[in-house]
Length: 161
Image (tube, rainbow, N blue to C red):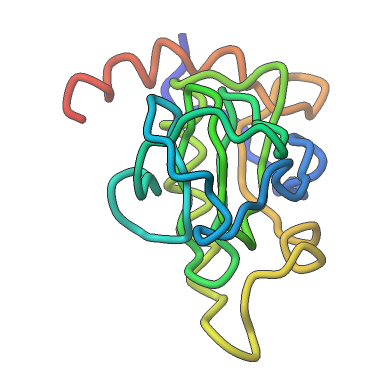
């Protein structure tokens, strides 16, 4: 296997690699039914993987699927969500059939670097700005991102996290 510095890299739009959507749930905290449970409630906080609390089933809201990356628009927080969850407002969701925790360990630091260009207020991360966002990724011979090959690299790194 080649080292990262031996691979060819290319800039890709985020939407070339991932599907980017608004959250399916988007529940204001004051609208939660008050039932505690085991489902994470994700907000725009930049701590605890975005988890503010654990809630029970919210009957009138669709739950978001797990195995995605969440981005808090106002705070530019970026986290991997392994399990299904509910969210507050202004959360965007990145998904891909090639996404797993190892790919997320590789992608999230790249996204956080790009998020630095946004800030609270006039230059925040919006859906339109995220769609124009580019990240550098290693490529194969066809100039495609090599997402499946990251597992061995990230497995080594994950020992330290």
